Length: 90
Image 1 (tube, rainbow, N blue to C red):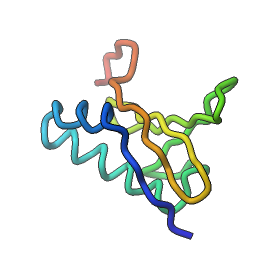
Image 2: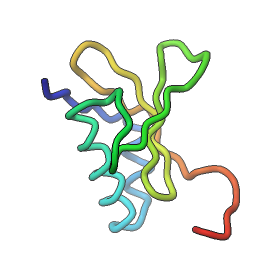
Image 3: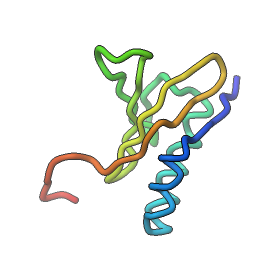
């Protein structure tokens, strides 16, 4: 079953503010969610957020994170944000 993707206006606005290459990377990771938004795999590093209602998931997309939730056959992207913390490997 292929899932539909819906992106919030807040997430769309943030992605438009990014460099085209960074936005392309995020979009490629979001497209991977259509196959299975629950299971982590290569190109789709997913973590289920603990204690959140509705159940929220976080997708790692390079230097950015994509937060989303799922209702029936639709993945709702609620926000896109830069990862927290500093690293020598960025």
